[in-house]
Length: 518
Image 1 (cartoon, one colour):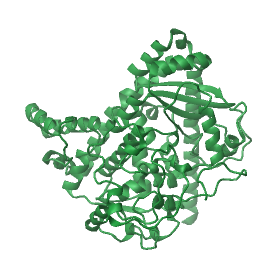
Image 2 (cartoon, helix red, strand yellow):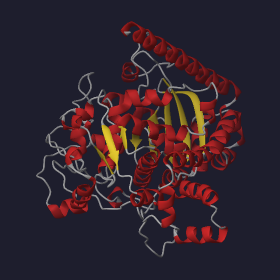
Image 3 (cartoon, one colour):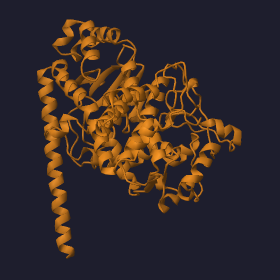
Image 4 (cartoon, one colour):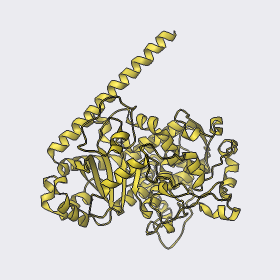
């Protein structure tokens, strides 16, 4: 029996389970035949398919498992209709219980497996070994960024000396482009965690660490987006940056979008190294909310790259780094270009289970299109105001209130009427379970002129992102220290210059090609 993600006996990558096959194995409604329902169904028939919950080639894993990419698989016959119908409960995101404590309490045993990216097993083990160097308890952890997922083509340059003594797996995966590896650690008790970590790794902290764990935790929790970063520290011979966040803060941002700081990070592919059931549920809400928000910004027909580019760019709207020479201007385009299959793994199952959007591309009939980075499939969404109003109604609570406020002003709704409307749409009353159907107001918002709706949604995102990003950046100057802050800014400005230089080179190349063709 083959175990996915088990330690390799050689230096090569493990036998690879394609995203398409994995999606079928974890119970999402994909077909492995050439007549894929994504290509044949209409919007009307999609509801029937999803209500029946049919799936082929489904394989189960222990609901208590923390990393689906390491589960052993066994073949099974197609489930019965009744089993399929209960596999992924309809409208699971309407009244989710974010107080769960076990994976068995998730809506389904394979719920949220799309969040787990498949990477080289030896590289994954090297990342996990870094976590084991921390005695303070880490409940949830993921690695992210260009140090884990490439955002440029492979380089032929000699290996960088950024890492002191990295493991061979890290050196091999970074392909000579030695880069700092970014981590986020989710912890249960902020002060307790920093108290233990200060005892073990006092050198990770700036001078602020001398003020004690109580002061450090207050700075973390009360300012910015609720994170405390320690950059440019060497663990296991590898240069890393790690951010610490309380699990309550993380889950709140994922489910409500109060800052979009961490929610935006998890809307892109990351490698989850330690999982938590509550975070997995909250992140699935975050991901499906990102799809709905992107659909409000897109026309009726669009491509995968347009969809994923819109999602990846949400958290950069209002980010001050994008307005300054402190970030690669092509960052979003690069993420999509080099991580397209991972975006499919993350979002295709969610798209398949939404009633108003579907893939409509003959290339999807190919058995290997899920793995093909050159395929840019087309999709179509139903622009019916009622269905789009339902999407508005199901946006994250904090973000939705900002959008509502903007339209209260635009539609000139009296404050008393507006307050009554908000009370009727309140999701926080635990004594009643509500169906999240779009109201007349939601439908009116969704039916606004497309260019006006896009503008209002973007402004609501900007108002969500801007202040937490600014305060988090200012806080980082204090928490990381002057020397490391200067180093960080210098490297970001270098990325900006490299991006501009590459952009000019691409323009020059395309213009010379056009002149030759004429």
